Length: 306
Image (cartoon, rainbow, N blue to C red; front, top):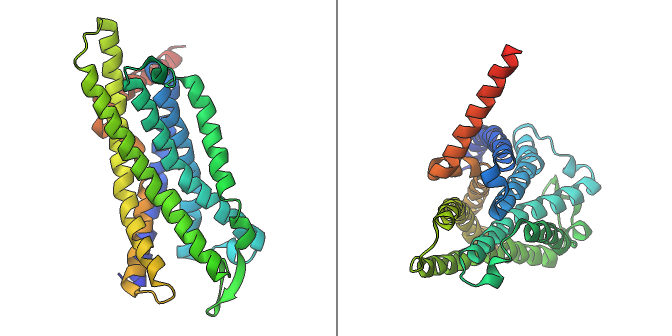
């Protein structure tokens, strides 16, 4: 893939992601907060946090990247403080989303367990502790980024980068493992354990009210599995090409560089498609969306009659 092709792909794909990602994230927030059946579920809390972070990624990473590629609007090439802040925030927000998915997988694993102690961890109260703790931990893990990144002049152009070659290799490996490798592995392991727990539950006889709760939990689990699948599809190609470039320093293969940039755009898809994956993949979520639209229509009619 040539640079002009990448330029054209970025021009048309990123605005679509921004528009549809924004609409999807807002609808997710409305549904998970307004629908009682979703609001009281602990897994929904992680989905809400995930959609908030997706919205932050869209407007602090995807939109500035598009403005930089298409219109050369990039303050990070002029101001070191902005370069440090932009890189620090972007790396942290990119990393938060997959770990929120890991927390949601952990929540579903606990819910599916026959162990009462594990099930007590799948609560909204626990979620209110785990989400800020994970966020603070990830931001703390990237504390070194503002120290080493700065605006500099290289190859006849101004860039936001780390001039230290050793740190560049370190941050490359750090992001490769912390963002691209560890979260998908944790997601897959937790999903496998959850499936094992579900098979154990099928042998038990449950009251009718518990069966209904389990059906709702299974629908949420299906939503989670779809998001995990989407995360792996968007993440793995980026991780593979990233690893290839790491071993090629300082002589990069142009094809691999272009693939890396392309799969970086694919990675952004993951932050704009959760709502559409939910609605297309689970009848439960479509039913809640339909009920929400009906309630909005009734309120509009009542307001018109007044």
